[in-house]
Image 1: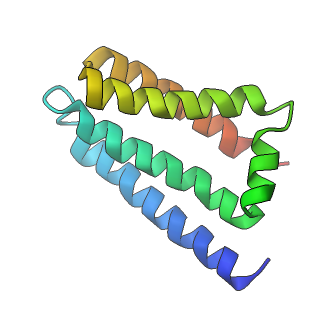
Image 2: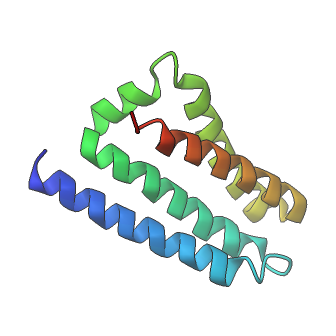
Length: 118
């Protein structure tokens, strides 16, 4: 691994952690009034977390990993739930659907992260 990839991994992990912190300490308490705050912070944190792992693999390696037959369903669920969360929060302004999509996104992200451990 190059130093640059490791640096990107730590930078993206740091931004992801910051965004998750904002989502839970700023966005969650205001979820009823402004679901977009939570959804944006949570989705950016989620995408940064996934991208951090991709920084270690490289773009082509990450895409090959995500589109492998055994992971394609879970990758599609992750991307779909991420886009669904943003759509429900920013376009529909739906409290219930934002929560459901965020939960689906969290579940997909956790599976994605755990799949890297042997």
